[in-house]
Image 1 (tube, rainbow, N blue to C red):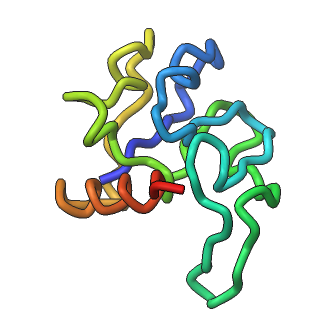
Image 2: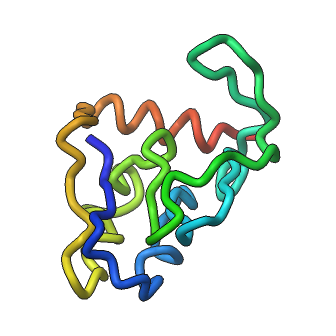
Length: 116
């Protein structure tokens, strides 16, 4: 499953630099597939191809957020999600709507970080 940041977030930013996939962004900030990954372009669910450097709509305007399609729960990098480990208010939690197996998270990590 992916990790999500709840609305209890105090916007301290402790989580952002800990993410090995650059999946965490400040509220209101546009995100990019290429941030912290090797992705040059991505095919979206509707079949559209998006440049990896194209800015994407923020998930939240109010507090830090995690792009679930880039979150691997730190699988392949660390033994536990680093955002949750450093969060002072415990608002980085499992997203109950996005369950993924360990194998799927490893596949996502490999996709995000393909050798150039």
